[in-house]
Image (cartoon, helix red, strand yellow):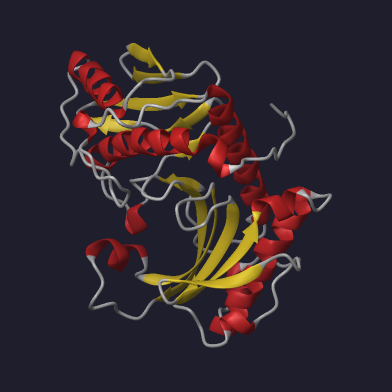
Length: 301
């Protein structure tokens, strides 16, 4: 497998593993969501890229904390506590979602951590309860390590992109409902009310945002890609020019979505600069059409 910073990630070659991983991550994310005090825009929900994989960050429990971490180098799930306890199990091909679920909750029981989650997948099909899901059990070590290493690079590039932004910005975080690594900038203004939206969207989009992310592909988009969207979407956004030329506008949920295919960035000769070019062009399109106060949220050059 390639050791390049941005190796290929063809969805068909690891799709069964991705579907299994997605459910593993939703189990862990739901545990974090249940026990972490709510934060604005659902910031108590996602996972984070770390030096060995993905993790929850410290989760408060009574007078202590614990963390759940995916280790994609040694291929283990690790649970550690501030009391010095450590428990783990191996992540291997054939480990079903059902077995993962039961082994993790057995560990939590051993550590006297009580938590109840809605133990079914969120917004993915088939909607088999985690405790019963023996269908999803693929674990390709090489592709999971590769996926994590790409996330590391994307996390780093997002940090470079944010270096002159001094407005409100979320942590760089992996949202487990859609398995995308994202970062969101805020104008500082409230967004129009959404009377017909559910509680998730009402909280996520209570303020004006421009969001950026990377996802590995799914049933609708059959390749990994970078994306950006502005909410609320200003008039004429989709008519603006994106860079590089391989980037394009599409529509999602009746709103413009900027797309840069991952493979186009990889083949550009300078992947990092190409990603930054795309992020900046999508951002400039959003702030100009939405008339954000740029002077208030950027450091002077």
